[in-house]
Each structure stands twice: as C-alpha cells, then as structure tokens.
Image (tube, rainbow, N blue to C red; front, side, top):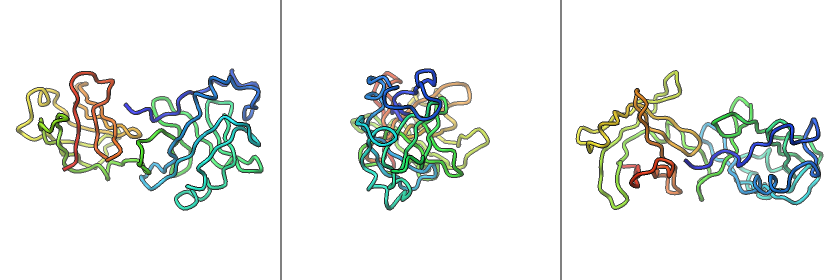
Length: 230
C-alpha cells in the first residue's frame, strides 16, 4: 500500500537528548531518509497542505518549506520555521521561538498524527491530492476492473462505520468467480489505502491514485486490478 507513514521511526535510544534531538545527534542517513514532502491534513477529510522537510540546519532543528501553503487550510502551521525529532519516535514542527506548534506521535500500523480532538496526520500522498479520503467521501458504487476496462464486479461501499472501524460493502450478483469466492463484506481506510475484507480473513488492498480512483496494492501480487468510481 502507499507509504502513508513517515519513512523511518527513530528509536529514543538513538537520540542523545531527553527533549528534541540536536542536529549533531542524528545519523545523516536517518535524516536524509526522513526528509521529503508530506501532506499534513485533518483526519476528518478537510483540506490540508504540503510541507517539505529538509536537511539543512535551522533554529531548533532542520529547515522546511511550503509553510505558506498552509496559511488558508491550516493557518497555525504557516508559522512553522523548522522541524525536528522529539526523542520519542515522533516529530515536531517548531515556530521561530522554538515553540512546538504540532507534535506528531507514532502509532504502530497507522500514520503519525497529533493527539488533538481532530487529529492532523502527516503522511505521503498522491500528487495533487490535498485531503484524506473518508468513509463518507468514498461511499457509493465502484467498478472493480482490469486496467483495460474489463469489469469483474460492481462494489457498493456503505459509509456507516461499525464498532470495529469498518463499514459494510456489497457485491453485485454478476461478479467474476475469482472475486465472488473472496466473500468480501466490509471495508476500511488507512491513510490513502483502502482494504476490502471478508469475515474469514480474505482481503484486497488498494492504493489511491491522484484521480481519486484506486489500484490494487503492489504488495498483493497477481494481475493488476482497479476500483473506479461510477
């Protein structure tokens, strides 16, 4: 699936400070691996903005760019002047006075996000996409098809979330046999990835494209497959 998490999590033992790591404490390879462009966006599907984490030194950490893009969707982040590791596997954005204005914490198997009432997520995103998909935005009917257009099944996604964080789905009666035998019944979202699942362990994972449709994750193997909105 799309690498929606930060590229590396830094063990606290690798950071010499108890607080945010000083520049001299970070292995250059780790720093370069973490650097890059990320989308910062609210979990509820509202628009976010892209920030580029750089490797040059800045007051309180390392330089970043793109904060001007945040002035409208996330004005508080427009004040960001640097970024740094927090010493506990997380990442912070810092203003010119070294005050942390956003702290992204790690959560195993999930994107890094703040602990606010409406969390902000920090993750890689398809080009041109400025917000996270939600159950509500993806609810509707999708064609499961081969890249050439051969439709294998019609999939209807319900946007009603259950206690386990899943939502129901239904397949059309004319699904191809190799899809029907998976007995797909529920779906969920993780960052820009969508997973369709059965109640007995079968699943198909998809990654979002820049046009809002989905392609089967490369980790799945087998023939290419897409989900295209009707």
